[in-house]
Length: 417
Ligand code: AMP
Ligand code: MG
Image (cartoon, rainbow, N blue to C red; front, side, top):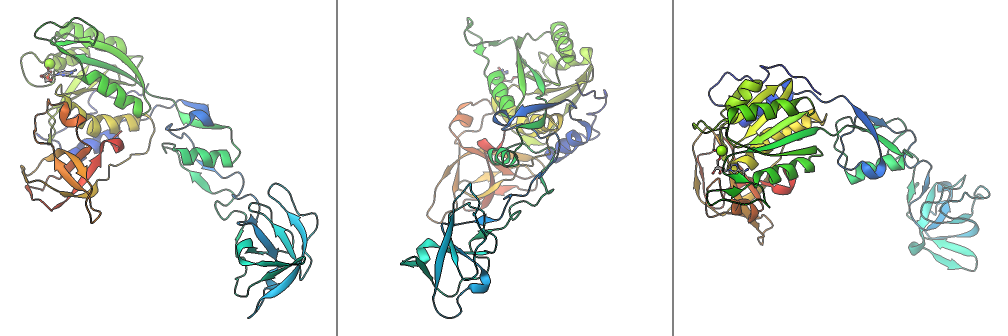
């Protein structure tokens, strides 16, 4: 487990910006050290634990990029078409039986190694065959339609870097190197709790004043998408002693504890007291909407993040606090979110100095710039506002107003985890 000091999340100011939160996390959270070796078929989305340098050049040998006829560039026709006797044939997976004879052409297929003496290939679509000869046009450049060894990746080039989250194309590259296993960081283990006397789990009896816990399932799904091993610890009652006991119990076996609910300043928000008696707590008052205070704590060296209970606040603060923490613990390089420009189809006024996220749907337009349509209601408790939209428009701290037609930045839900 990564051991963090009790005061590592301390923050001096009254309000923390999103950028400050991300910077503190990057500076304070250290990655788990254990590395495991996984098969190529298990490697997608895992975090690379070591650089991978090319153990062979790609392509490994010089080969033809097309089906056609290989010639030597010194024989290339100047000014008018020219006829070559065709001698020899080389197909993918085989080597030419003999070098190319000067003044001759050799039949060759895509991916076949270039015969000795040949360095240029005419595409079969560009030539004519006349009784055993090939007639080729003038104007082809030396080296045309040939893929030199190492043109894709030279031998020894560091092609994949430590901390990369592997994508299908990265896995393909490792396979092209002939490697069967990849060293990746072990998955981080996250303990998840909901808190609140009003909550019951789906499948349980719901009293009139209760609601089904939804956040826990949203957060567990988001964590799984980030490659975490998730442990579901259910719902904790709003009661300090039992909260403290439950949190202390899981700290040793997990890399991160994530809770939702109970972090406001109301009398019935007991999470803070629970964390304080189990370990140490700081409240981050973040300049972000939706989102309320986020609790940051350390219990026995294990970080704890307490997200607000309102589903939309929980979702948005997950993206800005939990996501970077999970990436840092997993040994992943930071993955800054890059909003895409879209056109606002709404009017909006906001307070200067805080960042706001507007739930929007995108509409195609004729000029190619999509238009963002704001969800009609704003409540942080509206799950429908997340379900019926495509993503979030990010309005920076300095923005005070948005007018229809203005360019704004859009973050699609798919890119957030
Ligand atoms: P809290 O942050 O505990 O004050 O909760 C704020 C609001 O979010 C309340 O209306 C809660 O009922 C609701 N809420 C808290 N936790 C959850 C949860 N796990 N699932 C759905 N709603 C929740
Ligand atoms: Mg609560």
